[in-house]
Image (tube, rainbow, N blue to C red):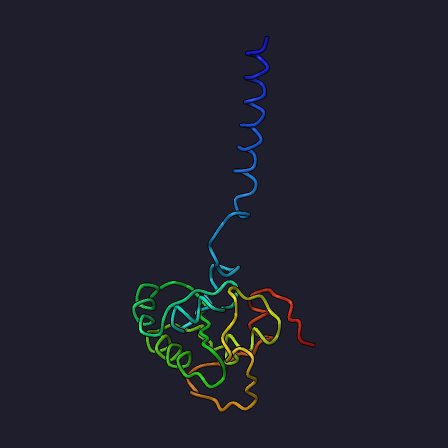
Length: 166
């Protein structure tokens, strides 16, 4: 009789754990990916800056590795959005221009960068300790007419995030 109780107890614990594994895999997922497999939001900053603060759902491809990344994704039906630190950073524009040169058609630059996203109160990952995140940069001159620039609200909409700015 005690053996039967132990077996039943064991099976009920096992069943509960099995159910958790089947129903709740997203709860412990460590991946930080965009909501849509077609949308790829790319931070082109150094890993240390990415680790400090980045847009939730974005990936890090350091500027020096962008061309290799794009070569691997050539032929994929994806929308690429590049960003860097703020409106003064030109790395995202150069990365987007390279994507266009390689034949990608849905290519954008998020001009406000990590700082603009952080200042808007939108979802970020990291401790966000770097000083550039607090500095507001109002003026912006377009970097290149070959790439389309998008705003914070545009990116939030593409990522299905409700913007807190209004």
